[in-house]
Length: 296
Image (cartoon, rainbow, N blue to C red):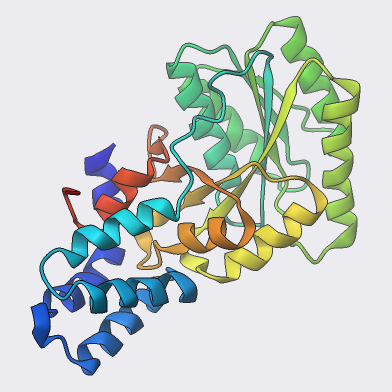
């Protein structure tokens, strides 16, 4: 994971690394502090977290401040946690989010990841609005060698979901991954539809543990916090998938997401291939963010 994640964080890392390199022991000036503060904020690490990093720099005016920063940042993130580990029942993972954040691709990547871990996986194509969504997911499911439930003629996402969960029970699937339609958090009718899908999963299919995962576009930075907050008001979010991380210098969004909303990043997209999805590891993430290798 480390090499791919390290590479994906290259833009974020390079945006702040030069500023850190310019800091030198007791000769740290106010101008140096302002520069590193600006770089950290531009990386979307979040104001409160940046303030605490600055305090660490001022307190440890020697080569140890980088290790102190790393130890602090790790405490600001949830512990490494596999969403599926320890589950005593089959699980439904609903992939939700705003249009264009990579839901369909992320759903397929999740299917591939858990299929490779030995699970029986069913993909459900519940995006009935985007014409290409079903065909796209069919291609991905074939590559991942997972079962796909879809209905190109259906206009009601909840009906496709119902059929998908029924099929998953019949086939004794361990994990059902549902690709939902992209929707703006300001569209009340679409958000109500999402609530309905969640109710169907929890009320009509009590055999399943239901988890909701939101896809977060790394390119959007702090704007994603507002989106996640609104989605969380309609369906309980159990985590996030951080997508397009390799194309942005705003890789610090994971800190704000957890600090403000207590939504942990569970997975990170580190490329375009089907296998380019990694379970989130806070220590490796911080390693990749700052290029710091060891903690004393």
